[in-house]
Every structure is written in structure tokens, then in C-alpha cells.
Amino acid sequence: MQIPFGIPFFMKRITDYRKLFGIDKDTNLNELKTIYRNLMKEWHPDKFNDNDELKLEAEAKSKTIIEAYHFLVSLSPETHLKNKEEYLNTIATSSIKDFHYKGQMLKIIFNDGSEYEYFGVPVNIYNKLINTPTQMRFAKRHIFDHFSFRKTINTAEVSA
Image (cartoon, rainbow, N blue to C red; front, side, top):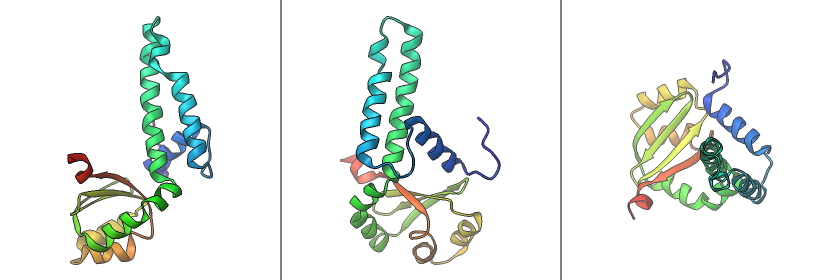
């Protein structure tokens, strides 16, 4: 699938996932969850045991539905509000261990094991982050409160 020039991959991903669920940006988590459950009932592979071709299609579709659901949940304002204290603690007390940049998406890995993706980060901000001697200070001033983000992982949770 070709991405139109000027539309970052993450925006295309959000748009495609919202289209899959038939929702807009104002849909709340309860509505999203209901739509998700209904789609999973419709596309559950066990419904197609007598047709191998449809079963394979349902398996692929259900994986996409699950991925889309978790992605949209991670971006929702309700999720951010629920995790606000943890996020604020991470950016206040932890330091940056590593970071990766691709297509206006900046992934920051913190020393506490948390990983966050920040969307729509221009390349000039990324270049300034690379070149500053105080990366955490720069990120606090120019990234953390300025871009949409989602938590991707906490290695402490994974290893537990």
C-alpha cells in the first residue's frame, strides 16, 4: 500500500484503524470496546472451521482487529488520564536510555524500562535531540508535552 506524500505513516495507521472500526476521534473507550467485541465475534476463526480459505482470512482479519484495538486504546485520552501519574513519574525521575526515529515517530526508551512513541516529531526536533548535550532536558522542553504519544512497553512488566 502506498502512503500519500506528506501523510506520515502513523497518521495513515490511525486513519485506517478508525475506518476498520467505523469510528471517529471522539469515540470513547466503552464504544470502542463494544465495536471490538462485535468485530471479533464476526471474524472469529472458529466460525469458519468448515471452510479453510475463510478460516485463514478470518485469522488474518482478527489479528488486524486485535492490533488496531490495542493501538487505538493506547492513544485514547482515557488511557492517558489513567496512566498520567506513571508517565509524569517516568519523565520526572528517569533518564533517556536510548531512542529511535523513523518517519516522524520517535521512540524513547527510559532507564526505568518504559518505552513511549511520540508521533509527528519533525526531523529538525530529532536532530536537535541528537546534538544536545542534555537530551532529557531538551525532551522535557520540546517533546514530552508537545506530541501525541503512547506507551509501548515497560520491560519491568514483561520480565515479571
